[in-house]
Image (tube, rainbow, N blue to C red; front, side):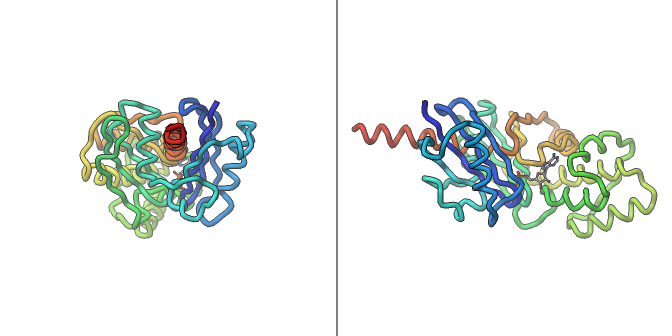
Length: 266
Ligand code: ADP
């Protein structure tokens, strides 16, 4: 048995996936502490514990994500775009578009067969359309982030949030609440605002089905539904949403391990 590992170090969270023989997910760990913290080490320790393995039993490890350059316990670093693409086709072989909304960025990736990256578009300059936007809004509304999806689904008359800037959008949310708009209608407006931004990103690369939605924000059913309406197509939310990049890194790690082994034999 060969175990490989992927470590995805994001702005908000650190993720680790351990894969057996390039095929079976043995353990996943997600720690809410990202780059610049001990999150990556904790995620690795937790995944090893769940898999009942020691670090020396990992044949090859690949680090990815925003904070990958600060992590020195991997055999190799790879771009998060490549890893997200690889994770997506591992989970859904027919995936041709990946929409990943993380804590501080959002990306749309166009894939060819086998998960080859053909094109991508990214928003990393602005909090609008990212998990951060949702976090600011949840705080302004006084609701836990994890409840926004279900709350927005109760909406009967969605409010319109016109500001693209997070700070101005937050003021808009507060003024809607002050005007006695129902909280569920405001939440639905927040989800719609994210969907509008992300649909713009997807248009830049061209939409091709099947479309996978990954990243922490994929756990919000309201954002997923709003995006499905905007894009006029179904979105597949895979089992490993937040850990998709780490999974792709572990898949790459297995391929690298095998390649190295073959070269060694020759
Ligand atoms: P990164 O890789 O950039 O650190 P992640 O893909 O881990 O980011 O996503 C983090 C974001 O996911 C958070 O900012 C938060 O908005 C969102 N998130 C996490 N858990 C949930 C949840 N249960 N429901 C909705 N959103 C969530």
